[in-house]
Length: 156
Image 1 (cartoon, rainbow, N blue to C red):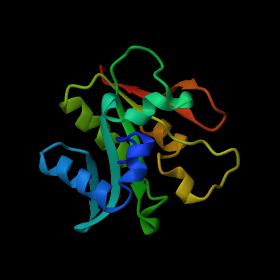
Image 2: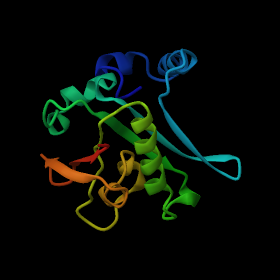
Image 3: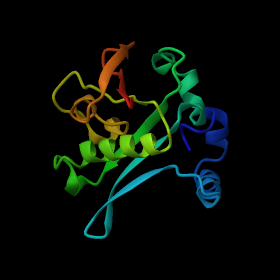
Image 4: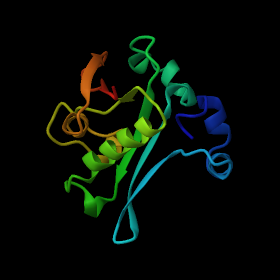
Protein backbone atom coordinates (compact mmCIF):
# COMPACT_ATOMS: atom_id res chain seq x y z
CA UNK A 1 0.00 0.00 0.00
CA UNK A 2 3.01 2.28 0.37
CA UNK A 3 2.97 3.20 -3.33
CA UNK A 4 -0.83 3.20 -3.58
CA UNK A 5 -1.58 5.76 -0.87
CA UNK A 6 -0.39 9.30 -0.18
CA UNK A 7 2.09 9.40 2.72
CA UNK A 8 -0.35 10.79 5.30
CA UNK A 9 -2.99 8.19 4.46
CA UNK A 10 -0.45 5.36 4.55
CA UNK A 11 0.86 6.50 7.95
CA UNK A 12 -2.65 6.92 9.36
CA UNK A 13 -3.50 3.34 8.34
CA UNK A 14 -0.12 1.79 9.14
CA UNK A 15 -0.39 -1.89 9.95
CA UNK A 16 -3.89 -3.34 10.13
CA UNK A 17 -5.56 -0.53 8.16
CA UNK A 18 -3.27 -0.93 5.18
CA UNK A 19 -3.60 -4.72 5.35
CA UNK A 20 -7.39 -4.41 5.25
CA UNK A 21 -7.16 -2.03 2.29
CA UNK A 22 -4.95 -4.48 0.38
CA UNK A 23 -7.30 -7.34 1.21
CA UNK A 24 -10.23 -5.32 -0.20
CA UNK A 25 -8.31 -4.71 -3.43
CA UNK A 26 -7.42 -8.39 -3.81
CA UNK A 27 -10.98 -9.47 -2.89
CA UNK A 28 -12.30 -7.19 -5.65
CA UNK A 29 -10.46 -9.36 -8.17
CA UNK A 30 -7.77 -6.83 -9.03
CA UNK A 31 -4.36 -8.40 -9.56
CA UNK A 32 -1.83 -6.53 -7.45
CA UNK A 33 1.18 -8.59 -8.40
CA UNK A 34 2.57 -12.03 -9.07
CA UNK A 35 3.85 -14.68 -6.66
CA UNK A 36 6.70 -17.00 -7.59
CA UNK A 37 6.65 -20.54 -6.19
CA UNK A 38 9.31 -23.24 -5.85
CA UNK A 39 8.11 -26.65 -4.80
CA UNK A 40 4.69 -25.24 -3.92
CA UNK A 41 6.20 -22.68 -1.52
CA UNK A 42 5.92 -18.94 -2.24
CA UNK A 43 9.46 -17.56 -2.59
CA UNK A 44 9.10 -14.36 -4.65
CA UNK A 45 6.74 -11.41 -5.16
CA UNK A 46 6.52 -8.67 -7.75
CA UNK A 47 4.04 -5.79 -7.61
CA UNK A 48 2.88 -4.28 -10.89
CA UNK A 49 -0.04 -2.30 -12.24
CA UNK A 50 -0.71 0.71 -14.44
CA UNK A 51 1.38 3.62 -13.16
CA UNK A 52 -1.77 5.60 -12.28
CA UNK A 53 -2.48 3.12 -9.45
CA UNK A 54 0.72 4.12 -7.66
CA UNK A 55 -0.02 7.68 -6.55
CA UNK A 56 3.33 8.18 -4.85
CA UNK A 57 5.24 7.81 -8.11
CA UNK A 58 3.87 11.14 -9.29
CA UNK A 59 5.04 12.85 -6.11
CA UNK A 60 8.57 11.44 -6.26
CA UNK A 61 10.84 13.98 -7.94
CA UNK A 62 13.32 11.33 -9.05
CA UNK A 63 10.58 9.02 -10.38
CA UNK A 64 8.29 11.53 -12.09
CA UNK A 65 7.02 10.48 -15.54
CA UNK A 66 9.65 10.41 -18.28
CA UNK A 67 7.10 11.33 -20.95
CA UNK A 68 3.41 10.88 -21.78
CA UNK A 69 3.71 7.19 -22.65
CA UNK A 70 1.20 5.11 -20.66
CA UNK A 71 3.22 2.57 -18.68
CA UNK A 72 2.73 -0.27 -16.28
CA UNK A 73 5.00 0.09 -13.25
CA UNK A 74 6.91 -2.47 -11.24
CA UNK A 75 7.30 -1.03 -7.76
CA UNK A 76 8.37 -4.01 -5.66
CA UNK A 77 10.47 -7.11 -6.26
CA UNK A 78 11.09 -9.51 -3.38
CA UNK A 79 12.93 -12.82 -3.44
CA UNK A 80 13.27 -14.95 -0.29
CA UNK A 81 16.75 -14.83 1.18
CA UNK A 82 17.55 -18.49 0.47
CA UNK A 83 16.48 -18.06 -3.17
CA UNK A 84 18.52 -14.94 -3.98
CA UNK A 85 21.28 -15.01 -6.57
CA UNK A 86 19.51 -17.88 -8.33
CA UNK A 87 18.08 -15.85 -11.23
CA UNK A 88 14.59 -15.85 -9.73
CA UNK A 89 14.39 -12.03 -9.66
CA UNK A 90 15.10 -11.89 -13.41
CA UNK A 91 12.53 -14.61 -14.02
CA UNK A 92 9.93 -12.69 -12.00
CA UNK A 93 10.60 -9.58 -14.11
CA UNK A 94 10.18 -11.58 -17.31
CA UNK A 95 6.92 -13.07 -16.04
CA UNK A 96 5.69 -9.59 -15.07
CA UNK A 97 6.36 -8.42 -18.63
CA UNK A 98 4.41 -11.40 -20.01
CA UNK A 99 1.52 -10.64 -17.67
CA UNK A 100 1.48 -6.94 -18.59
CA UNK A 101 1.50 -7.87 -22.29
CA UNK A 102 -1.59 -10.05 -21.76
CA UNK A 103 -3.24 -7.00 -20.13
CA UNK A 104 -2.48 -5.03 -23.30
CA UNK A 105 0.24 -2.88 -21.75
CA UNK A 106 2.62 -1.31 -24.27
CA UNK A 107 5.48 -0.45 -21.92
CA UNK A 108 6.57 -1.78 -18.52
CA UNK A 109 8.67 0.52 -16.35
CA UNK A 110 10.72 -0.18 -13.25
CA UNK A 111 12.54 1.89 -10.65
CA UNK A 112 15.40 -0.30 -9.43
CA UNK A 113 18.40 0.75 -7.41
CA UNK A 114 21.94 0.68 -8.69
CA UNK A 115 24.25 0.69 -5.68
CA UNK A 116 27.41 2.76 -5.83
CA UNK A 117 29.27 -0.09 -4.20
CA UNK A 118 28.99 -3.73 -5.14
CA UNK A 119 27.05 -4.54 -1.98
CA UNK A 120 24.14 -2.88 -0.25
CA UNK A 121 21.77 -4.12 2.43
CA UNK A 122 18.98 -6.17 0.87
CA UNK A 123 16.37 -4.01 2.63
CA UNK A 124 17.31 -1.12 0.35
CA UNK A 125 16.83 -3.14 -2.83
CA UNK A 126 13.07 -3.70 -2.49
CA UNK A 127 12.40 -2.23 -5.94
CA UNK A 128 14.93 -4.60 -7.53
CA UNK A 129 18.45 -4.11 -8.82
CA UNK A 130 19.25 -2.42 -12.12
CA UNK A 131 21.30 -5.41 -13.25
CA UNK A 132 18.28 -7.69 -12.82
CA UNK A 133 16.22 -5.37 -15.01
CA UNK A 134 18.95 -5.27 -17.66
CA UNK A 135 19.13 -9.07 -17.77
CA UNK A 136 15.34 -9.18 -18.15
CA UNK A 137 15.50 -6.95 -21.25
CA UNK A 138 14.82 -3.51 -19.75
CA UNK A 139 16.71 -0.42 -20.92
CA UNK A 140 17.51 2.71 -18.96
CA UNK A 141 15.47 5.69 -20.17
CA UNK A 142 16.17 8.27 -17.47
CA UNK A 143 18.35 8.81 -14.41
CA UNK A 144 17.67 11.71 -12.09
CA UNK A 145 19.71 10.22 -9.26
CA UNK A 146 23.08 8.48 -9.31
CA UNK A 147 21.60 5.30 -7.84
CA UNK A 148 18.04 5.28 -9.25
CA UNK A 149 17.59 4.64 -12.98
CA UNK A 150 14.18 4.46 -14.62
CA UNK A 151 14.12 1.42 -16.86
CA UNK A 152 11.66 0.32 -19.52
CA UNK A 153 10.75 -2.71 -21.54
CA UNK A 154 8.75 -2.05 -24.70
CA UNK A 155 6.13 -4.71 -25.46
CA UNK A 156 5.66 -3.92 -29.15
